[in-house]
Image (cartoon, rainbow, N blue to C red):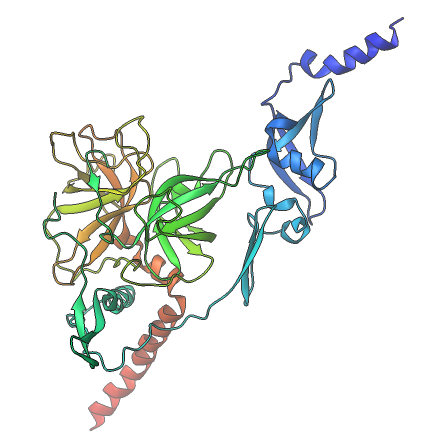
Length: 457
């Protein structure tokens, strides 16, 4: 006959006798959603799972269990972000995406500790500059597509942050345009890169994940990629930047700064919605492009302004392109604290491996410090063409996607932005896209009538 103490010992050892161990997969069932939600997790010690710790000691509820290890709980720790389900506002955010709630009036986000709500600002055009001379911009080229027309107009509108309106010296009642370009005249000078100059790339964004809040630690950010501001609300990046093996959401974007960890340098925004291209294929590394929507509209200025989207009529250098990012300086090294930049040359893609209709291939030239290239942490950043017919402006031709090695003479592969221009414009400027389509349809409907009337006359 087995004694009670032996029986209890067998029960305690049962998980290990059956071969179970910390790290094994498990499932959390959320019953208060309809239908019930099943969240993947792994079995972890309570002390290694911030979510379960908060559920037990802050919400005073039973955390999802795997088994007991003596007096220690081994819990089912979620592999996706669940922090927003705990704390005093957890019930309000249970059905939301990563603690984000959107309404017509406000955007609220919550991480289990803090709840922040920002009123939605209406979509207003840029302010009129009364009394200031017209911007010195070229005429709109003919035969542009709907998407190119909208992209061209947005690029021209943002020239007001390059050709700023200021008072004449000695006559404050008279206004003039003053060029405040911060791009170095010798611009062709981040493996092998050099620190970028202040305001040289006012559209660059560094993107970060929300790190888990472990016991006793503070809320922190892990910077994982780059992007390009293309409007006052949207950032262009790579789709694979949205994927995190630990299920953490891409939550933060920092604009207007060079040092990604200096809280005094730049402005921090919260990402409230992600738009991965519907054809994105992670395994095939195709259609690697995405859009990020920010929690509020960016206050545009000479320090933060959007990059131009590609239009066929831009005048650019034949093959030289700029790259910039906060990634590793070389393979397996630390990522850069400051924004680095260099130039690369467009190369022909090997069509056996890459589709040139949706990809661009480029490579740096050999230098004393190595071969300039993008590296880990630069993903999502722009491959930029310096525009020769638009003052002090770049166009984003590619998005950093992948490459075999960092700075070793291998081609870097970039997603070709022009191929996705319709999708970008429809997502970012949906109302303007629809109005333009309606105007074209109206002209198409009127054209037969005009032609018929002319024939009768």
